[in-house]
Length: 550
Image (spheres, helix red, strand yellow):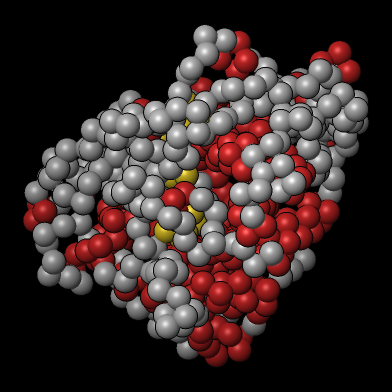
């Protein structure tokens, strides 16, 4: 979203942004400012991707038109985009396939983070929740103010707000476990800002209720109208497909395997006669890079958007985060490179297509090497290519800094279903392997052949996790995959040990002994509540691993 600055006081207002994260003292209890937008004021700023500051508070008196609702909803997506750097850090640096040279994030990577470290700041996520809460509270009342705000449109807006709130709470659960659960909009001084943490089961239940409430409206869209020929809206706004994927995600996290499979099937088993616009798995290996360049592919379900056209002139900082040189903030670990090299060798052996990149070797930069001269032994460092490159092997990195960040795509839905089938038991293992091979064939890899009677749950789960690791490198998934391994433990410690071994093997910036000692405490699997929140909210209790001090 492009910020159209029409007011010289914009940055003064920006300092007072509406921060819905419960930890605000009474002396700061005056209402925080939300960016409000009236999309119809000018022809230059009348699009969904534009933000126009207009008023200083979201109050009862603000909500007069459907444009008011759309403006606050749009700000939720805007804040989600601002949160992407945190999403990458939280999901990757502890997982051992990507490491960082960023000073603050390195403390999380090395399991030395403290509550005062900026990396654990969850305020950006609560900004999104704040916008969603405001829409959920006030959108229905706008129908009495604006005759053109029909129930179908209002319910569609509610669906998007439910998705944003539910996704953010799942992100918080995966990283902090227990956090304040706020489902009311803060719009006046009567709001209570000191709220204790809710438990993970309570938050999980709220996430599920949000998704179900959205779907119950019947207004969750399958697609949105095209905007300016950019074809981003159906991928950049929450659709019913995004709600299905989110529900599958939270159910898998909560070990609700049948429910996970049910929601995966809502995406995977759709009759094309009923709908032609559902997300589809891209099975052709030569089309794989379309997922990332130009993006918004058929396989995409939801991705956070940037647009570098002359009209919007948006840019992210992926150029520095994923630079194709030694200055890159995020690089593959040696552990990941070894796996990438082995997989690429197998993929090249299985194909005669040498015109473009093959399989998941697309993740790396080979721009200085010809297609038939890929000598990985002479390539000391492979770089994350998906956010910077094109599908041309010898091409230069693309100049635009507008790569989208994908939250869900169909490949993940397939692998979520496969994982749930593995955990359901032996009767489902053959079906799980078939799904794994769908992913592997797209990567030009050999099928996995499994004799059910000669395998076990752990071996199949290892196969699932390997495919997830390679398929979603640098997409903010790896740490949560490892946490699920630990959470699958049957009481014998086997899965917890596997989890620790994987973290140790991948980490190349701190001592193995330290990681093993830290991860013995399950509380250390999660980040601390930010000290700034503890300091001003007497109801918040710190994660016990981190004590009560800075």
